[in-house]
Length: 329
Image 1 (cartoon, one colour):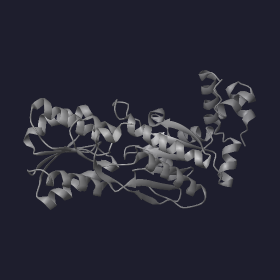
Image 2 (cartoon, one colour; image 1 turned 45 degrees about the vertical axis):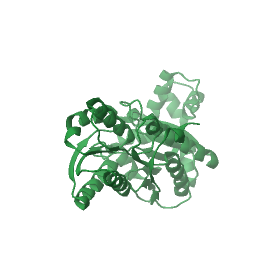
Image 3 (cartoon, rainbow, N blue to C red; image 1 turned 180 degrees about the vertical axis):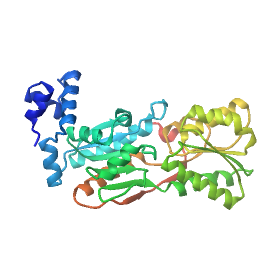
Image 4 (cartoon, rainbow, N blue to C red; image 1 turned 90 degrees about the vertical axis):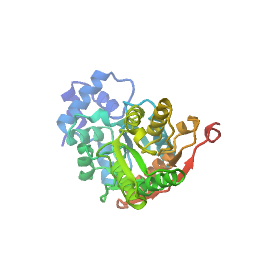
């Protein structure tokens, strides 16, 4: 069995230095930390704290694995609300929490990812923003080495739960409300990211609504980008009577484009972010309580640690119009 002494020898450092790296002490140089982590990966070393936690089913540390949208400036609100909700609930359970990001593991194999997580004494993971293209994360979930909770990704097994809202119903409801409050049957739908679980659910809802209300539906992918949505609205907005967007950020981009073209089209969004309160024009949107979703994920992770099997947990949503006075404190 590989010991901490073997790791120290491989990395060419003292045993105490290896211990500091494994326990995430701050006063270790990045070069030394990289050497130790490389040795841990090469030797497939599992710290005693991880092994003990796994064998006794006690909690070591949990990781918040966030798919940060680095190409958008205004999307941070949702990620910060997720992190805030998780940290507050984790304090109640006395969980130790670290935050990691998808881009950190872009070129890692699943075995490399597992070794890294084990070197950080991780025993549970909450995953935010998982798409169908994130194959390494899918493999990680399938191996069931860690207890996992996926937000908005319908992946479940004995060690994995999913926390979500009913995106199909929510998208159907907010689009229907907006259409019924206005006139016309030509709808421009600006969807989110291709190969996203949420995107597929919402497009399915829009297609059902089109059939139910005899709509002419024009679907384009806005990648949850305000800029992309703005450009799509410039290109297709005049041909439509109503613009339905799969995020508030894209709804703002669409509305700004319509204003620049000096034409009016009703627009609705999705998410219920504070940004909508600053728009100056009331738009329907779906409010998700991101803090509550994330807090529920921590609670579900605790249930998995206690031996409960993975399950689907549905959280509530509501249709709202956000006013400036709703968001100021």
